[in-house]
Length: 329
Ligand code: SF4
Image (tube, rainbow, N blue to C red; front, side, top):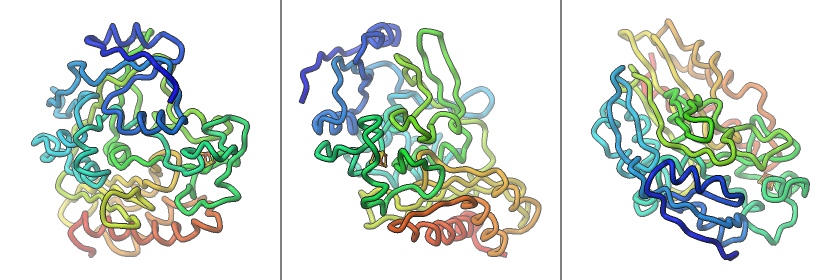
């Protein structure tokens, strides 16, 4: 591992000041960054520990929404009474991720920043990985890509975002609050993670030195009918092959509004407004849910090893919606 300096920041301003040094990485729980540093994938020169900053509170906002501090742990967030009551979809997604020990350490800010689990990215013995070494190629494209993207990928990278939490945040239309030299910036979750394009080394739109300070959740009427469905190779401690965050606002049996997001299929949580709109104004039925799934997956370009994801996602969307609604019409 490359030597690095370590500094525990006590204020956000101090962290931002230290973050201006080239080669600095912020570290929260360290559940991803330390693995990457030990593997030689990340080689920080300076580590600024933001895990001790007073950013761990979860509180109600005046508009009926909620603010989750960036250093709140995944476990505390999932089990917080306010989140369980108003945003059970987020609680479900968090509890579907990682293990109990990891959820105790991992922070909400760090979860948003976690990097892909593509094996070629993690193994520095493979020379071709545009995300790790821009311009070197993509080992997964012609190699093993069973876990990789079927939507929004490019010839430069077919990796997927591994976060469960971010899929629920996408469905809940969260806002990521960041601070940097230019002051505070609010970024819709839909715009926070990037598609790979020809610069897959950048996972998010964060600017150099910026740090996440909070995640804001708007008021929601989706708490009563929601479900996070994660399909994976084993029952726990595995990344999603496909996941679905489904949430409905019902008026009697009719759908008044709907939110759908897919995980495990793209470089970012995948949402298509038309897929949600097709459910509105009528009772949820299997044909309507199937049509929503079809619209959500429109434009998918599976590869030989991951073509199974198309049918898997189609069925997972229908199933998640059915569970969220408490049954089909
Ligand atoms: Fe690297 Fe992306 Fe290709 Fe994986 S899919 S090898 S992360 S460029």
